[in-house]
Image (tube, rainbow, N blue to C red):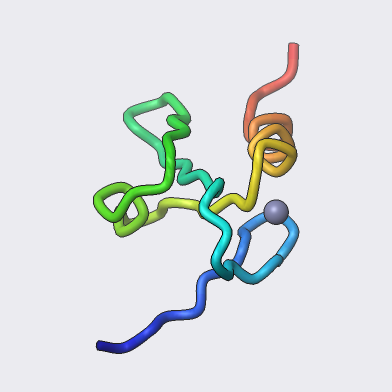
Length: 66
Ligand SMILES: [Zn+2]
């Protein structure tokens, strides 16, 4: 089994044993954020986020402002 290094798409932190990571992906025109699981993290174009702080940063940068 090849172990792939995973790092946060926002801050670049490398994923280690911690498991409070999130996966974000586009579904239609919506940005979906879900918990870390093997199904979602392999989606093409998905983003890996090390925690809620980075989820908020991603939403803030990809959400069109008023
Ligand atoms: Zn991060």
